[in-house]
Image 1 (cartoon, protein in one colour):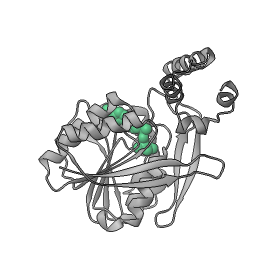
Image 2 (tube, protein in one colour; image 1 turned 135 degrees about the vertical axis):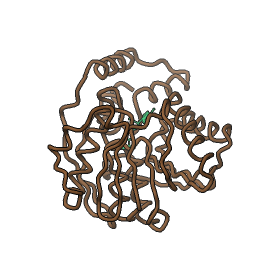
Image 3 (cartoon, protein in one colour; image 1 turned 180 degrees about the horizontal axis):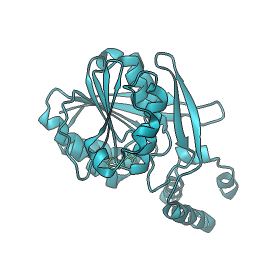
Image 4 (cartoon, helix red, strand yellow; image 1 turned 90 degrees about the horizontal axis):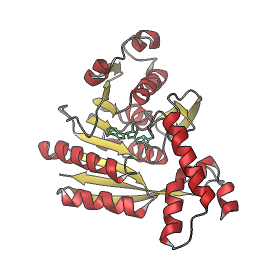
Length: 290
Ligand SMILES: C[S@@+](CC[C@H](N)C(=O)[O-])C[C@H]1O[C@@H](n2cnc3c(N)ncnc32)[C@H](O)[C@@H]1O
């Protein structure tokens, strides 16, 4: 087991977080090797004490319909206290699916929850031509980098703001109101939306979210805001893509949807493999109706 753990690349850990590995060992009534606990707590304290993410890279993602998208991101799964500073597998799968199903999103008003660094929205804007797209997230550092990614990818056609000019305008009040960018026929808004505290008053027809089902504490607030938005707008449909990591967490999400009266009309299954050397990840896309 120790050798196995030592051999884990950061990417493998991304598929199977250390905590999940320890749960699996405990579930099978085996003893968790002490070094594993020590490593886990060390990682947690490193994350808590690292106030800034400064080791950014630029990754390019290629979509047949949306073309190449460049995302400024980190290799850290958690930094600045958020999971939003890197791009997760489910957003790639949902982006690919949206590009293929573009008729569902064309001329629609779309809200994305937990948008992270923007890969999904950038692909949808460029391939599906929605009427409006609202990127939302909670963390200041995620919103700031998300805005940079939007400018990097949409700058040729945006309404004339430069990145330097727009950087001045990022107080928390601005994030609450939202920062607007016009791109081609789509009105783009980048906005802070906390599932726990905020409500959504925007006029929307579709909700998208990728890799937001990973922690039961977070799922409670996610389902609450989904219920709030969908019950006020009976024609809105939500598409939520999740990587199947911990079956118990996934079941918790599905039960929470049922408990608050939300209806999953279909659930499609996908496999994502970033490269032949990486293990494939199972992803599902839930279509949720009020
Ligand atoms: C695992 S990341 C996924 C990011 C992106 N969707 C992707 O797939 O690459 C989860 C995202 O949910 C956001 N998030 C977590 N709790 C939130 C909350 N209470 N309100 C709003 N966003 C939240 C995080 O900031 C983070 O960006």
